[in-house]
Image: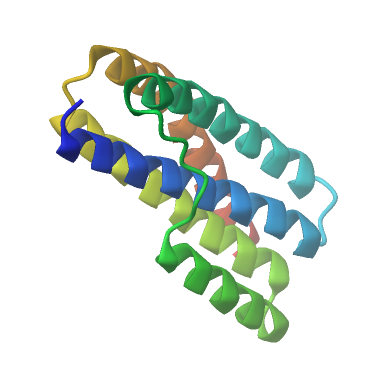
Length: 145
C-alpha cells in the first residue's frame, strides 16, 4: 500500500471510530426507547467494517488505528452542550446523520484513489450497509424534526 493509500485508510478508520463514539454517547442521552437499538445496529456495522479493514492494515503495515479525529472530539463537546439547550433527541440524531455523511464521503474518497484490491473489496461490500445507516438516520431526523 502506498503512503497516500495508508493515510486515506487511517482517516477512514478514524471517521468510523468517530461514529462509534458518537453512537455510544448518543445512547446515553436520547429519550426514545427505540433509538438505542437502532444506534447499536449502526455501531455493529461500523465495528464489523473497522475489524475487517484493521486486519488488512495490520497485515500490510503492523498498524492498528483506534484514535479519533480532532473534529469529532469538538463535535461531541458541541453536541453535549447543544443537547442541554435544545431537544436532545433531535440534536443527537442530527449530529449522527452528519457523521454518516462524513463516513460516506471518506469511503467515496478512498474508493476513488485506492489500489489495494482487498481493501476495495471490503469497502465495496460494506458500503451499502453504511449507506442504509445514513438513510435511516436521515429519515429519523426528518421524522422527528
